[in-house]
Every structure is written in structure tokens, then in C-alpha cells.
Length: 499
Image 1: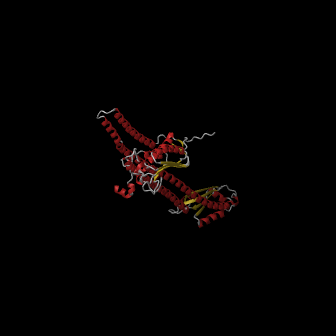
Image 2: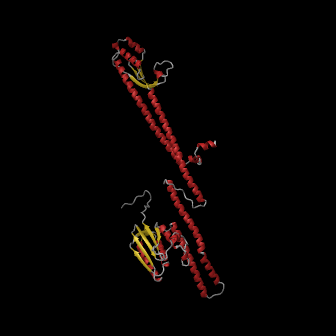
């Protein structure tokens, strides 16, 4: 039995659970459409069949009506012998498969005894058209093959008891109708069959895509976050969902890697200040010292504690930004004014650091809906890094260009810059380049900048400020902001208030 099933069904169909296939919404929907389409096709073809049948019967009845009218006119004229002769002559010819009968009952016998002029000229007749078997209305030899042939019969009851019967054999027409009916049944069956096959194909296709998603989800649940949903070239709704889910998985994987990296970096970077703090306190307690020494040690311990608190606050700020918290603090902000305030502050900082030139190039004052504090904090981190890593006689520039629909903020310097191979890594938390290990900081500044950029749906571009300079190529970081279209937050169905 199993061997027969293996030979009967293709491999892809055997791999699928057929009971599960029949429970899929795609198969049920295809079955419903197949049934409705088959019923509609059957109704249409049935209407064509019955219309053809009625048309054939109408044409035959019209010809029978002409023959009946001719014979009745002979009867009305009183020419009964001519009527009988015409009937006999037509029965002998039988060219069109017709037969003619004039009933000879008691009323007919009585009419023979009457003179010819006694036959009424104005007769009331009742005419009917029916379809019967040839043997029921015609005198045929026993065992005649024509006994069951269909005949269209026109019967006319005359006023004196006579009955005129004219029959027309419709075997050819019935054969055409039978052939048409067979075509109707066959076309309906083929429509239903192919619809079911299409439903099976659609159901199996959907089921294969769902199984692929299920397998990938199982692998991801088992811990392999590198797995992604398969995206085909068909660009259908499954591909659209797979693309969105893959983007979500990329984000989740980045967050998981970031969390793991943060855990490792926190353990590594916070161990040194904690160890240094403990050792300093332990050494201080080994022997009696002057109060000034204790005060100095306590001040240093407080400085180390402040550094740790600052690191944890920066980590919390990044986490809040990535979670989208504090969105209620967004206001319409003039970016040029904000950049000008920061420029005044850092001009003084640059003067304190020695021969360092700081200049601004604020060409516009765009209005942007944002979190003013976060934008200011991001620019502060960029300016801090620029001043920190720019040598003496260096130049730091802050510029703003664009309008309220799209604008850019650029911070540039002519320091050592960042190698292109390290530009993606510097945005990770606690990452510091080798030449920065001895400088103060915790490696969270650019991570915070990137979180602010993502929160405002902006773009961050990092490039060399002087690409041709191999010694001090500098660094130029540009933040591109674009105004989002307004979103109607009114409930559905609500109407705007009209003044």
C-alpha cells in the first residue's frame, strides 16, 4: 500500500502531511473558489444548453405550425377529400421525418354521412405541442428501431371531434442536445478538477513557505540568531513579511551582541577603577596617616566613584534612547540657535586648550521637531572628541546647512582621524582605539550619538576631512536630518472641528 502511494504521489506531496494540507486556509479558500466557479460555470453552460433546446423546439414547432395551418385551411374550406389526400401524400413522401394523422372517431364517422356543405367553415381548435417517442404516436412495425426515437408532436382538436396530429422526428436535434449536455457536464467536471488541483498546488506552496519559516524560527529559538528567513525573487507578500522579519532579527542580533559586548566591556573596563579604588583604600588603612592624606585619598575615591556613576548614567541614557523613552519631551527647536549656543561654549574651551582654532559656519536656522536636550548632547560629544583629538594649531569647525525640510550638521577637525576599517566599530559601546587607551573617557560617546541619530530617523556619515593628507586626514562627521510627514493621531471616524 505504501509503495503504491509512493508511486502515485510526487516527492514534494509525500513530504507534506496531507491532512495538514487540507486544514490550511489557502486550500480551503481555493476549494471555496473552485466550488463557486464550478457552480457559476455549470449555471452558465446549463443556461446555454436550455436556451439551445428551447430554440430547437421553437424552430420545429414553427414548421409544424405552418403545416397545421395549411391542413386546417383545407379543412375549413370543406375540402375533406383534399385534406385526406394531402395527409396521405405527405406520409408517403416523408422527406423531413414527419408523419400526419387525422383521427377517425365516432364524430368523424358521423361527419362522413353529412353532405360536404354541412361541414362547418368556422372551427374552434385547440393546439398542443409535446415531445414523445415515435412508438407512442405512430403505427410502426413490431420491433422497429425507430420506436424510441424522439418526436415533436403538434395535436389539434377540431370542433367536430376530429384530431389532427403532425409529428416531426428530432433524432438529429436530440443527438446535438445530448452532445451539448455531455460537453456541459464534462466542462463543469474539468473546471472543478482543475480548480481542486490548483487549490492543492496553492496550498502546498503556502505550506512549504510556512514550513520554511517554522524551521528557521525553531533554529533561532534554539539559539542560532544568525539564521534568516528565505526571500525569493517573486517579491510577494511572503517575501515582504520575510524581509521585515529579517530586519527585526538583524536588530535583535545586534542588540544581543551589543548586550554581550557591554557585559564583557563592563566587566573589563569597570574592573580597573574598582580595583584601583579598593587598593588605594586598602593601602591607606595599612598605617596611621595624617588627616590631609586621608582627605586626599577620599577625594580620589570620590572622583573614581563619580567616573563610575558617569559611565552608568551614559549606559542608561543609551538604553533609554534605544527604547524610545522621553518622546514626550520633543519640541520644535531652532537648530541654528542651538548650534550657536554650543559654539560660544566651545570657543572658550578651544582657547583654554591652547593654540586651537574653532570657527562656525551656521548658514541656516532650520526648525525641527526633536528632543533638544538629546541633539545638544550628541553635538557636545562630537565637539568634545574633536577638541580632544585635534593637535595644537589644529582647526575644529561646526556648520549647519539646509532648511526646515532637510538639513545637515557637520563637525570636522584636522586631527589623526579614524581609520576606515574602524569606523563601524567605534560606535559600539566601550570600544576605544589603541591610541585612545591612555586618554580619559569610557568609550560611550559615539554610541550615544548613534542612538540619538536612530531615535530621530537621521543618517550619520563619517569621512576624512582632508582625504589627501596621509598624516592628519582629520575627521568629518555629518548628521543628516529630514522632516517627517505629519501623522494624523485623531481616532478613526473623528472629524476635524470646523470654526
